[in-house]
Each structure stands twice: as C-alpha cells, then as structure tokens.
Length: 261
Image 1: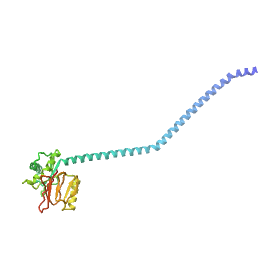
Image 2 (image 1 turned 90 degrees about the vertical axis):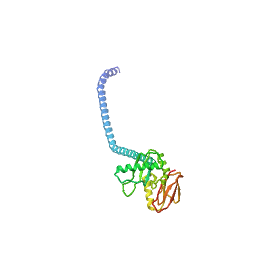
Image 3 (image 1 turned 120 degrees about the vertical axis):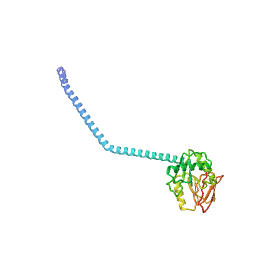
Image 4 (image 1 turned 45 degrees about the vertical axis):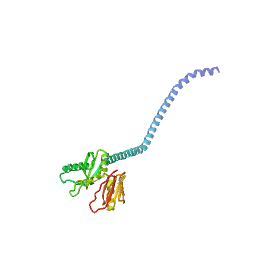
C-alpha cells in the first residue's frame, strides 16, 4: 500500500507535465475555432444584411422618391393657390378703386396725344360730378377703332373717390358736354362674360349685377341705395339724387348711368 502511494506521488508531476501542453493545445484549438466561428458569423451576417438591403433598398428609394414628389407637388399647388389668391385679391382691390367711363369722346390723334386727351376728359368729368379725387391711372380698354368710343378705366388711390363718382354720376345728365357719358363699376372678366352671354340670349332684357351675381330684373324702377348695380339693355336710364335709377324704353340710343348707394 505504501509502495502504491509512493508510486502515485512520483507519477503526478510527470502527468501534470504532460497535461500542460495538452491543455495549451486545446486552448489554442478552442480559440481558433471561436475565431473561425466568429468570422463565419460575421460573413453570414454581412451577407444577410446585403441580401436584405438589396431587396429593401430599391423599394425604400421608390417610396422616398414618391413621398418627396408628393410633398413637392403639394407645396407647388399650395404656392400656386396662394399666388392666385393674392393676385385675385389685388385685382379685386383695384376694381373697388376703379370706375369705367362709357361714351367719353376719343381723339384720333397719335397714341400719346390720345392718352393726354383722355386724361383731360376724365378730369373734366370729375369736375362735372364734383369729385376731388385724382386718378392714379387712366387708360382706354380694348383696341382702338376710329368708329367707336372705347371705355375709359379710371383707377383711384382709394375706394372713397370711386364711391363718390358713382354717387354723383347723376350730375352728368345735366352736363351739356357729357350728358351721353355714363359710369359703371369695374367688374371681373367672369362678370363681363356672363353679362355678354345674358345680353346675347335676351337682347331686350334688363340685367343687373348685385353682390357679384348677374340677375334679371323686370321692374321699371330699380333702387340702388344699398347695392352697386350695372344696367344692361335697351333702356334710357339714369340715377337721381336719391339713388334711384329710372328706366324707360326708347328708340334713341340709351343713356345709362350706374349709381352706388
């Protein structure tokens, strides 16, 4: 028994000495295996990511492109709407500051001389209706035709002057020089087109514009104390001091005058 114990004690160092290189070899082998597995896992992960990105990226790009296009289109439409609204508001504001003189004499001189004469005529008409406002712009509408008198658009720098012109246009009826001139508000192209259509469909009818609507009237006396109106038809018409427009049919050329209360 003692011999066996002694022999085991003598063999232990030898066994331990043998196990050290074996353990070291196993450790290195495990490290190599782990490194190899890690590299394989890395390659697999990279390949997987590439496959996923390769399949998703085109769809992602398409989706992003569509989103950007949609945003740009929406913003462009909004910008166009804003520009249209701003332009419409500016035109509406100018119309509120404007009056149209119909029947004023038109010179046959050179264009710049015609313009000077038109400005003089407008000033004389404003004197006739006793309005102190000075126009900021005066021009004929339409193409020059020596056989016709084009309307004159008169733009003031405020609405007060335009309203005063409409209120006092009845005074032209007593003017020796401008009794055949009548004054109306400035209306949008849509209103003009509708008036033209209505007039063509019913050449003997009477139409007025109220609150930007073209309506037919059958009454012989039309009150304009509260609303602006324009009269279209084969009628002699002119407002009196009370803001009432009296209408009567006649065989002569009609004298029309629009009043605003």
